[in-house]
Length: 337
Image (cartoon, rainbow, N blue to C red; front, side, top):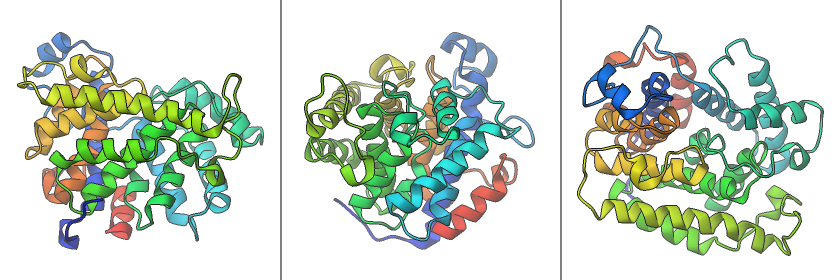
């Protein structure tokens, strides 16, 4: 793992949390539009300004806040401590009157089963690897915990709703990317570092965090189960490397790394947006919002990455008070900075 000198004055945790929300807000009105429609509405560069006061976010930010508060309130970051806090926060979210932002069906279905009191391994949607698991995992990467705990937390929060091994692996990689950036790694280093992590963890099943989640028809061992997820993530990272090896055509990044509706594609396409514009965070999230895919999730993750790299200075100062949930983002960022 590559680390740099952590400069607290950069406020990387705040930059990452606000970046996630800013990207989410920019991508919210473009999520179900074609690129041509986005260009007609916003011009060739896509959306560059927050809309509304406050600028509204989607369930991506809402669920990231649910994860963040569960982690914040945990006295110890163990499976036994964190799981009930995550469950409670997810159930509070599902009945909230603000949960009216076209939430994902996987999260709704799993939360309904969690609400019945089922063990989470039975409540989860076992076949889903939708991006709902890693759109909300950024707070895990901002914690001061060892890498084994980071991996367990990332996979646990994913597994409560998305039980597919790729949802678990992609969530861990997303949190690990945020951790690397928070610790001072450069954006350009991420593809190689994430690929190395995926290869290293390929057959590591975290039974203390996941229990018997691996037991599925046709799966012979925990290692075989989790390897399927890491292999799909490695394929997505390979597509990212191929895209980065070509000149930027300025077109929809989803053409190269996928539309982002599934976990590994959301990670790869968000990274592509961040890596195409490493020194211009607003352009990076605008690029994520100007896609034919899951624009809010792609832009949210891109914002989390560039925000962790640059800190709060990445973002226009007048956005700070205009984004929805600014008070919660400020409190959490201050606690982790």
